[in-house]
Length: 468
Ligand SMILES: [Zn+2]
Image (tube, rainbow, N blue to C red; front, side, top):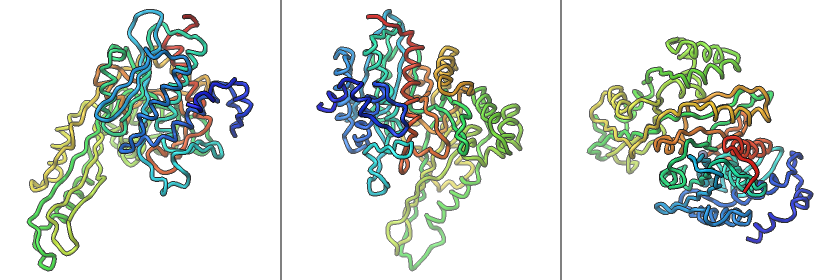
């Protein structure tokens, strides 16, 4: 609370006190946003650490101090997880626009990091810390936008609703609750800060393209399970659960799912191809023109960056077998994680794995209940607002939709009938992708541009103007 008040010191004093290495971020709202960002990184909002409620309490204090009335703040508790929803009321009734970010992070072990993951550190043009990119820059951008609206007495033409999800990295239960909340359920569309962004050339740092996430692959994990009577390891038997599982895994490795394409993926791959030289660039252009070009598809299949946009993928990710070094294994188990192309049924992927493995003794069990989400048809108003916001910092950069091979809770909104477009406004180099990994970081410039991006979208899409 003491620190919250400190935020509201006369901003010129704060700005003078602030001396960031990037130099240019001295606007009062940017100073305040950096302070909020720094406080948010310090909360270890990973599953099992129960720090999200404290972070929500902090955010509520910041919002109230910034003039947001209690009646426009709602919290949700779902199975031990907490979420926050904030409303900026519009001048007129109308379907709201939703902005979303998630507060939780994948855990980080301080002993494995070079720096303390739960302390924001600015070093040589980067912000370091768990959540700097995924997704606390987004959380900060939403809070900063609400505060700027309040400070400038900006009023949108219709309600803007800002959702802070508590469990995106795990169950997404709070996202489901948010999607059905009375402030949210009628939303015309959503902007998700958790994906979408600009790509900078790894060597030159020049902007190559800006991507808006318009669809996600279905996330499904299958367990391959082999059981065996086992026995003493001094008396090996002909069948062995570990060998049998290993043979099944060989088959999974060799199996390729059929090549697929939609208007969205062709537009994406074509635009990326235009900006890329070499054999991969050529394959991208050819595949975009003709998805039946087998040669081009083969080149893309070898590219970790593009294989997921051209087909369903399944890959072994975990292994567990045996119970003692001197006993024959009674169980051997492997997790196969699949990213399924939109429109393909989970059941058919399981059938394809069954056929490829061709061993009825290998049981294939799907984990949980995977959810397939629809493609969000691109809206010209949304694409135009995003393009304008992107061009404010990177004039002329191509803006295209893309299919997410990873996963976000955007799918939950899409399943609930809210078309969702992920656009973080963050430009990064592919080599700087450290989300979920060690030493997560975000370029300082990207952080401030991300703030500006979300603010511009809220003003533009929300038809905001001064007024009460
Ligand atoms: Zn995320």
